[in-house]
Image 1 (cartoon, rainbow, N blue to C red):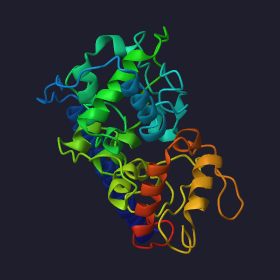
Image 2: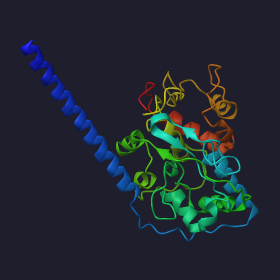
Image 3: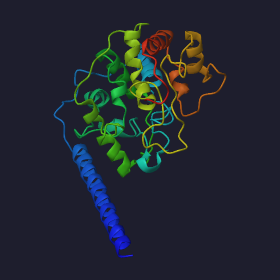
Image 4: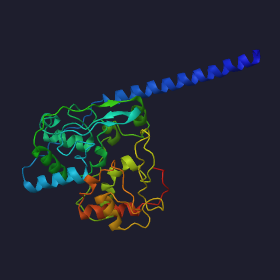
Length: 303
């Protein structure tokens, strides 16, 4: 019994030290995240970007907001841009896209400040935006960025308060580990590669595909999103692997985006915002498919 007691005491000490180590790691990581979110960046507003009342520019901006950036998704800022549905992400927290109209945060931002948050993920305060996937669409050139700002200025004002935005410890840890981009400005770090004019090429499709990375992974092979609750659908493989898009045609891909119909006849989960991506024009769909088919085939789940 004496030996057993000593062994149990020893095991208890190891477990206790492990718990203290884990607790210390969590504390230090959370503090580092909070300090990073408090950082004020010296990137100035992009005052060269001006909103226009030109109908063609507004129409282009509307297309970008709906089909390319996905701003109008129900889980982002909503069809009227007055705020999306709260996303309950379990231990990650609850996220809600804010009201971008003149009845919300849009009223407080200049054109240059709106352009800055899109391109660099930096808010009016100079601090980082939270979870806004600016890294997915900040590649648009100045002309398209001005078009997007023009559209944002053209939508009707909606008097609606912003929904909840609460981050759990797990979200902070995953952000610092590079698995989840919560601290947007830190993720972008001022490094932006701008696209040229839209073309039906894999080179342009590479930029469009950035919006797929958040769910399907930087390798586009899908798999469970780190830290996501169990009831969240698992993103599929977008590489030309047999577990992904091998054997697919452009027609198959267009049908997926427009109707949510997979090649095997199954429907996509509603989590996939086809109401937005289905609005891509022919050039964008061709470019995106060309890029995905140019990727090296990867087995499902590697993200």
